[in-house]
Image (tube, rainbow, N blue to C red; front, top):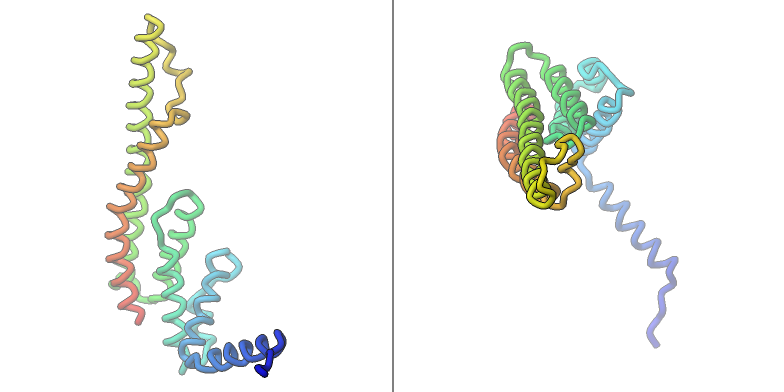
Length: 196
C-alpha cells in the first residue's frame, strides 16, 4: 500500500530545499543584496551619506556592496509618470554621483544626461498634453457650434472628460515613453558597466 505523506512532511521538505538554496547564494551576491536594501532607505530619506556607509563596510566586501547600491539606484531612474517618480529618479541620480566619488567623471556626465532627459521628458509630456487638450477642445467647440448655431464658451469645455481624449492621451504617452525608454536604457547600461 502506498504511503500517504502528511502535509507537515511536505512542508518540512520544502523548507529544507529552500534553506539549501539560500545557502547556495554566494557571499558576494548576499553583500550586493545588502547594498540594494540600503538604497531603499536612502530613497525614502531615512539614510544619507552613501559614501560614508560604503566606507563602513569591510574593505573586502566594498566592491560588491557598492555594485548592489549602484544597481538599485540605476533601477530607480525611470521615466516619470508623476512627480513622485520624478523626485525618486532625481534622488537616485544624486546617489549615483555621490557613490561614484569622482567629480567631473564619466558617471557624473552620464547622470547629467539622465537629468536632462528627465527634464525634457516632463516638458515634452506637458506640451503634448496641452496640444491634445487644445485640439480636442477646438473639435468639441466646433461640434457644439454646429449643433447650437452659436459659439460655446471655451472655458466650460473640459476636453479631458471626452473618451477620444483618453484614447489619444494613452497613445501619446505610449509613444512618448517609447521614445525616451531607449535613451534612458542606453545611459543606464553605461552606468551599470561603470559600477561593475
